[in-house]
Image (cartoon, rainbow, N blue to C red):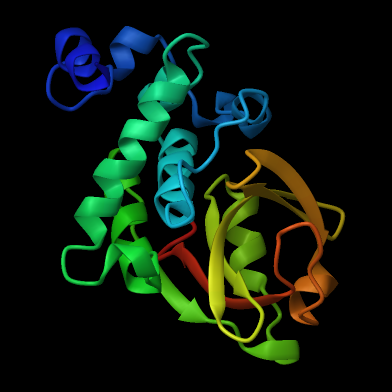
Length: 207
C-alpha cells in the first residue's frame, strides 16, 4: 500500500521534489513539528534507520514535508525504516541493529541533497569536549549518537542545542528529550534509555 502510494505520487524515490513542496530554506525545517507526529521506530532493531530517516527530514525540505503530512507521514516513515535498514545492513545481521559505519553511510545518503557527508567517531570519555557535535547541531546539521550501558544498544539523534543542553530525538518513544552536555561527557544520560554514549556520527564539514 505504501509502496504503491509512493510510486504513484512521486515516482520510485518516494519523495516529492523541492519545487513541489514550496520550501526554500533549511531554517524552516523545525524538528518540533515532526516531534508532534510522534514518529517511532517500527520494532526493536530499527532505532538506527529511524534516526537516519529523521535526519534526512531535517536535511532535505522534500523529506521534511513528506513526513509532516498527517495522513501519510507515519506510513512513509515506517516504510523508509525498512528500506534504510536493508540498505545499510547488507552484510551485517539486521537483528544486531545498525553499526556506526552503517549510520555514517545512511546519513551521507540522506544528506546528499544538502551537500553534507558524515563520518563516525568514538566517544572519548570525560576529555571529549563535544565541540564538533555542538558546532554541527548549531549549524542545523543533526548528529547521531550511539548510547548503551556495557555495550552499545540504541541510536538517538541530536537535533538542537541551547544553553548547554542538547535536544535529542528518541525513536522508541518518538519524543524530543533534552540532556545536559555535561551529562553526555560524564556518561550519566537520562531519558534516552541508556546512560553512556559510545559513538557519534557527525558531518565531515560544518560549513
